[in-house]
Length: 133
Image 1: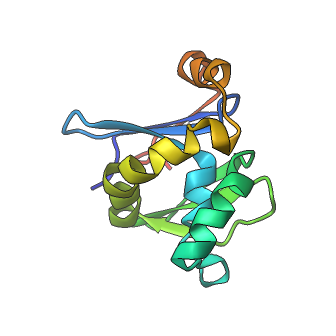
Image 2: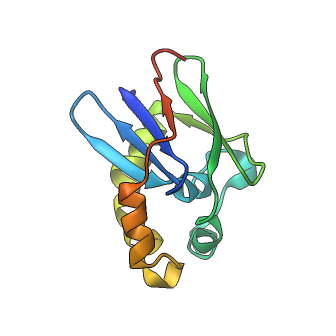
Image 3: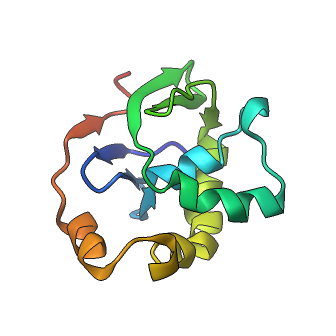
């Protein structure tokens, strides 16, 4: 499913994807980095749990389409080889993010209540229209 709108919020390090169905999901950019589909970044379950805290500060620096089937996200840690097909991206944000959200926004992950409020109020600094790219 192709999103109708994609908004990158650099300050809060989140990406919002809106779909024609009315669904809207906001995910941490570190979550997307952690779940990059590139072979170089595949993690086993233990590594995902251990790596989540390390990905909290990672942000997206580039968004590019790959043909008409995917996005390539570039991250500020230098990783830019992960391709997110529209189906994989939708699965991540609609299914897997629900399970990971509590970890990424938990105090033990280093995000306090003030940071959570800032994420909700942060201005959009980059808009990306997947149909115009």
